Image (cartoon, rainbow, N blue to C red; front, side):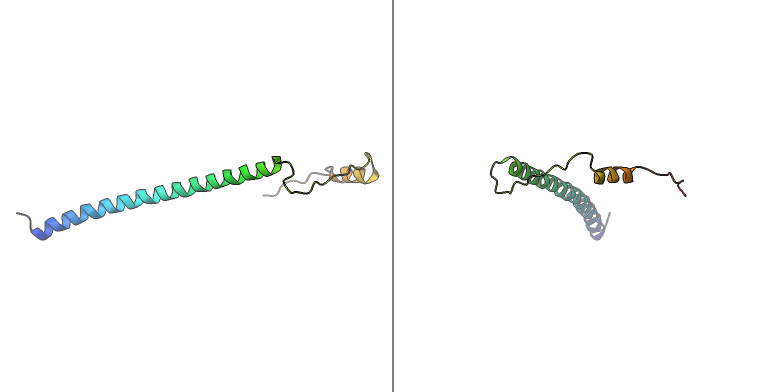
Length: 92
């Protein structure tokens, strides 16, 4: 016949394992909840920003961008400077 203390230890072990399993599950749910809340917050921000852009007279100042004349010497210099001059081998 098992001892009373031995039976209590077995029940305690079963309860501890159940608690540990539930804690692990709760941790997974907390992590999933945090990720879902972050995603929702990003969508809220995106909706607000798009709404602000699409709303006429949203209180923002319109900025006009003046176009420079085409084919200026400065544009040609920038374009030429951006062209690749030589190719160097990669050293690993």
